[in-house]
Image (tube, rainbow, N blue to C red; front, side):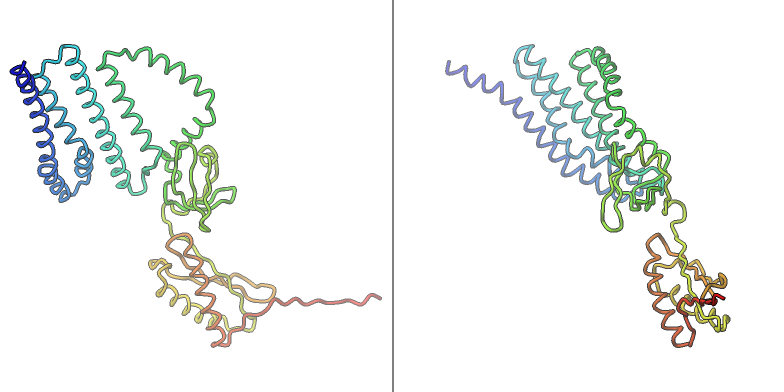
Length: 346
């Protein structure tokens, strides 16, 4: 009995040693080989290799552990029943680990591709979730097939259940497909400033399964069902050229010298154009006479801002400066005047 115990323990020393060596090799591979590959990927122009290397980083040691375990069980006689279950555990663990890495890789590559589209398909929570769920479903089906579990009844049940669920969740599915339509048609994308026909205005911050989130300039948040957003008439200020026309009306006295008025006004407009960052530098400000008003001759000054919202500081600064400049030049901005003629009844 005394000689038998050390012999049984020795049977476990080699397998345990193989597992420990596998873990150590995995740690060294991660610290040395993977670290060097990461540094090499950072120097390349394509960002996809960084995503692939980062996706497998968390699974490296686990893969080495599974490999070492597959070698270790060959030296242990645990019986065919237990060895079979350990082998299945190794296969299932490998498939699940590869599924996790593939999910991170696909989502990362999709995100990278979306950022390179320059106004194309945006990367949103909806597409990320669809990609992730699809990969996990495929991984689960592969695992079930590996365990010799028939998936045909499951697919049949899912088909019947899916029909019942689609009828019960008609409105929800309508919003889901409306969200896909919004993204694929590029009607709006994250970061766009829009105005709906119902009057709401704001920045698109996210498009989820059912709703689109819009942030108002006053920092209020609108949650809009995708179906309503898809059917709405939308003015997208950031589609195409995001620059925004700024029109400022002015009225001057009928006694004014219009050439003098236009020259002074243009001096102020040129100064605004050069000094303010909100103005589009490739556009030249313009002044046009608009007509004869009730109390004044009306003019319109035209600027162009870089994007919607730039009109507010431009108007503020122009009104302040032109009011001061008119005072210095003796140009009168008349008050509204109305002449009443009273007829005496006979």
